[in-house]
Image (cartoon, rainbow, N blue to C red):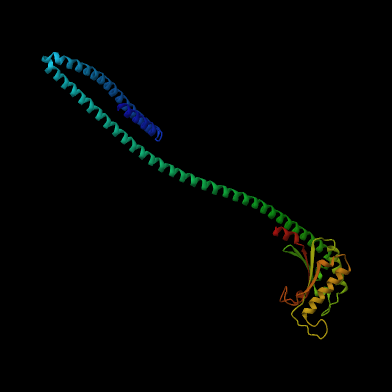
Length: 329
């Protein structure tokens, strides 16, 4: 009986020790050792008492044999038998007490182990939740890093495109400035005859007042005006990536005629067309880059000066197709 309880206590302690922490395991191990020591002591005592019991039984047998011969020792033997019975009772009570204590220890150990397992399960669930959150954060971080890398790549590409656009626009501006200076130098002799050269918004504007080019109400260019137009054509005919718009402008005096030109619209268009014809006839300018348009009286440069409003404006504009292609990339 005591050996079985000791084995059960030892097995329970070993099982519990596998499920608890190091500190708790050491406490259980200490308690188990104490129980084991107590169990060993009781076992040794039990063996001693068993040996004594066997001896007493042997003596009792001898006494029984001697009772027959020694009736006078009956009282002594009876007392001795009662004493041994009392010892037996004490041993049984001690065994029962030991069994009760061992059972209580096992019950306490089971309860404590159950609580520890519950706490361990809660801790495990909490750790799993934290790991799930950490994995989600790492995944989100990876996504953000990928997005940042993509944005950085796109930013570098855009910066390169902006730099390319800025360089291209700077080159266009420089070319327009050089062209303006070249045109101004070529037409310097006409400076005081109603001809101006300006650069605005990356374009070169050559403005010729009507008095330099046309007699009043006429669409035929004067000889001096033809020379100015040919001088201009000679400057621009070697230019590449250029668009040339010839605009005709009138003043607000209304033209009423049954013949062509019948009004200011026709007069402005025909004068612009006459300038284009002189440019193409006296230079190698590609007609595809030329266009003639009439603006009538609706774009005056000075509402108080009709003479300035009667003019031809030749707009030299760089071809921006390359810039538009960059912008669309």
